[in-house]
Length: 388
Image (cartoon, rainbow, N blue to C red):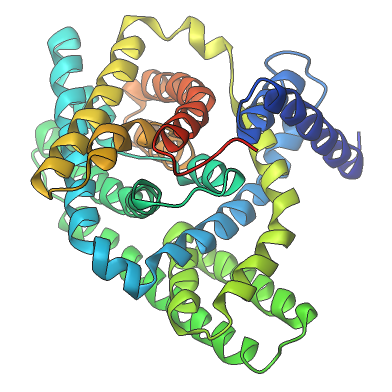
């Protein structure tokens, strides 16, 4: 089977399943994920597993464009209104989730190192599915703005928490503290990504302001976003933060920012479809057999942590009732970052590597299917999105 045939099958499967999902009033992204699950190795095996790995670069490109659009929400006017609340809510929900997951799983397993690593990974939230639902239903309002900002910041906090967790485990197992791994590398990764993204964002603004044709407004941002993804990978920086920074600079500096974002969005739609369908192919039903009681506890405890943490954060910052009551349900999706951190942890601690990977993959399977549905529900419930 050749690559063009694979992409055609993936695209058609995504379109058809999304159409069916919409008939049941489900978000399109849920349809894409289900399409991947059906045609992938778990069920029909229409697409060979090797193609899923070979076309992995499409996922990086899609995440880059999704992150670029997240950057649009970091417009200074909006940030001034939300900054204090968003930072506080992000910290509250991340830290409380980690504490709850650690406490509940430790009570059951009594395995300190396993619980530290799993609880740190639990803080991660996948912005891709959430943003797709927001765009599909043209959602606008205080809950939408807060949700976009929190999912954008959440992975930054998670990466730092995970780094600290690895340090704790090193101290516990070896009695040695690796300061460079724990502090310096994460800080350099964040600063490097922000600097790289800011430079590329300035170039887009400068070039686009002098090129008003639709062709140039598409080619210039697409080229530099792709360059940012490549450079971030080359130098070990965060692709997500790099592209968020590009989008933030464009949102704050460009006089034609809305036209740039709209033009890039029209280009990225088929990439999103392919990305989410491929994501569905990564979901392995066989890991559900190995989920067990620990996995169920993890799923419930993480959901409780996100909901309780968001409510407490919203209460402390005096956010409106929509944010306090519903934000946590929009933070449940978990995918790329969580899987990546699980792989890192599994490589570092092979004795529990299989257990970590299987638990996180099973949770991703659950959250990626149910997460978009819950996001749609809360946005419509709060009158910030409407059924078409």
